[in-house]
Amino acid sequence: MMKSLRIRSFEEYKEKYALSVENPETFWGEIAENFTWKEKWDQVLDWNFDEPKINWFEGAKLNITENVLDRHLEKRGNKLALIWEPNDPKQRFIRYTYRELHELVCQFANVLKKKGVVKGDRVCIYLPMIPELTIAMLACARIGAVHSVIFAGFSANAIADRVNDAQAKLVITADGLNRGAKQIPLKRVVDEALESCPSVKEVIVYDSLAWMPNMVANRDSWWHELVDNESKVCEAEVMDAEDMLFILYTSGSTGNPKGVVHTCGGYMVYTAYTFQNVYQCDESDVYWSSADIGWITGHSYTVYGPLLTGATVLMFEGVPTFPDPGRFWQVIDKHSVNQFLTAPTALRSLMAHGEDHVLSYSLDSLKLLGTVGEPINDEAWKWYHLHVGKEKCAIVDNWWQTETGGIMISGLGNISPMKPTYAGFPLPGVQPVLLNQEGEEIQEADVEGYLCMKFPWPGMLRTTYGDHERCKATYFSQYKGYYFSGDGAKRDKNGMYRIIGRIDDVINVSGHRFGTAEIENAINTNSKVIESAVVGFPHPVKGQSIYAFVVCEKLPEDPIQARGAIVESVVSQIGKIALPEKIQFVTGLPKTRSGKIMRRILRKIAEGDISNLGDTSTLLDPLIVDEIVESAL
Ligand code: PRX
Image (cartoon, rainbow, N blue to C red; front, top):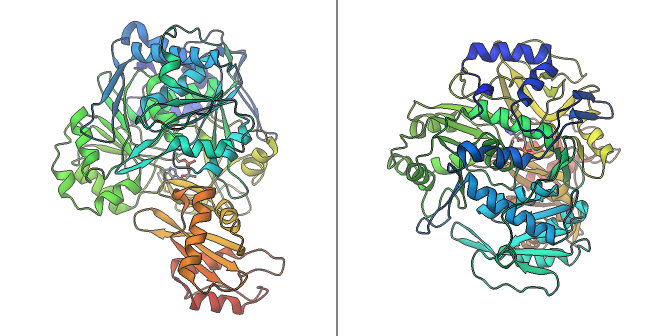
């Protein structure tokens, strides 16, 4: 563990926080000293939020995998790096020590090299939650290739969009995956996607389920055949601190998902530092985050953060309810997990099955619980604290985003004060502000505002791939001089933050982010659809759910069939994860005279709150609102 990085008390946190604000460069420079660099930096930070230009540790050279793996070999070579628990509890789990993981990563890195992948090339990874996913990511990083992991629930079209945007040369996938009782043919989805991806020359297929998928000649090869006889030694490519490490696509209010770019040096320092302090793992601890590596939490807090600090990480292939709703708790007891991180949506779905499942397990190895991805409601927080943590474990509520790279606001282990539904205090180095509509900083307590950052932190995004203007427009133009998060928040008199939720057109369904525009585009691919408007509405388990108002040439005679067709469009464009829960056919949408859809009204209708729809007089056709209300679902 990186002992010197670890904050031990709330007093120490306050000291470190003050230092990090007074002199950020000294603060981060000292933290960065704890890592292996091939060359040190000339300057800790060079930045402006106007372009934006964000350079951390400029001039420094490193390879992140030497920090994730090689650095630990001397002291922790035989320590477990990874414990993999399969979907089926009857199947054997797998364990790799740091030395074994190092060898596997080097071996696969050599495979990628032989396939012609060189520094800077983009590699898309569409794999199940199996150790090979971690190995593939680290192998890319080893040779300086940029990984772009695509969550294995996305459709062929969604894969194609990402692969084409990244202009990936190679794709890594598997025959199929197990998720609970379901099996999904990944290779088949990739084959369909690649019909429209001319940049991809090679596909490597991991044989996970012995399904014998179709292999395309001169393009597809088997992982196991390639690694056979491959050397387990691979020198690490020398990277600049600001060279790209990975791209991860995420949804925003407008257009297609954008490729958030993270770079080597800053991301390394930030994920390790935040992991060390938020999770406070001791050397012999086993840490588990249930998040899928297809999302940012898996990148930062299953792969990079924990392994950078030399922790033992558990990786789980399955789902919380398979074979029964006790699975999480069974896995915790089986592997004596000490720190456990999950999402509120998972907790709420388990709560719905009653306490018996959780009460059948001792859970006495647990020391700390984490929650991430969406606001946690009071009831779920209390259930987690009482039944899982047995009132002896602190809960750290981690607020952050794909764009922030690592945790920004959260408790630290069990040393910070806790307040249910509050994420807590900013981490050292993080300078949040709340802005009002006019862009002025709110100083008062308990007032809601737009959550922004006024100073850079090492883990922040540097650009959106291939479109720097988009990065500027999305995050740095709303309020000049600030990074705009898209979230609303409140701060209490002690300085603790409570996240309210998105204030833009982003919907958070079960902790997964979707832009309304993205779902509307998918619905509009249906030839019968003229236009649509999508909003989020509260859902007891998922946090938010998707409500679609759809205008067709004429109201469908068979709404069930028409709904099925819309569902089909969304499944094929994005994937099942973005399915609208409700689809209402309407003859028009509430629009202003300038043609803008008044989503505020649609949101209220979706919530079932029609008592006060506000001023509708500026609408082009106010009567349309009555019609929509009457046929609301
Ligand atoms: O709205 C916030 C919510 O999730 C958004 C970021 O989503 P994503 O980039 O997919 O990253 C999720 C995992 C870090 C944020 O803008 N969010 C994330 N964590 C929390 C949260 N909302 C409330 N509390 C949290 N702890």
